Image 1 (cartoon, rainbow, N blue to C red):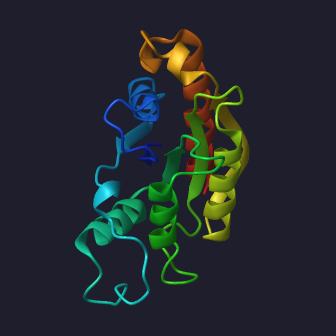
Image 2 (image 1 turned 45 degrees about the vertical axis):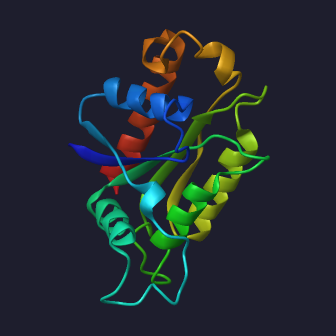
Image 3 (image 1 turned 180 degrees about the horizontal axis):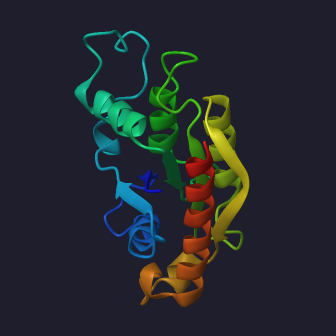
Length: 184
């Protein structure tokens, strides 16, 4: 069974290692897993209930909601900024959690992965992202984890897609997410 997985990347930086990690997931996705990278998180305004009004939801937020609604699962890639997830990813989750109880993220299988400069690979950010997605109504795969430390050194001259260990770990994460979404 083909499973549509939407990847959201919490870093907007052009040379982002998390963006590269998402590209690696696309390249090494197991058969039956169709991963699409969502483009446009930078264009989504900060969540504000005053502008989240039927018929006038900002176009960028509406595109995100529609993309997530069409997906079977989400794969969230997050760096760690000051010990937590970046605002752009939190903002996306906020938009996806509305309308309350019926947001596009409700019931979606979600896995959180990423890489960061520090020695723990961004585990605090990953934990916070899992928590936020779960509170928003997602079906978070709590035991599916991939936190790659030392991103600046590890990926200085090697794209994550060309790192054999990372490719194998990503393939396993996507396979687990695929299995969860296919069983739903």
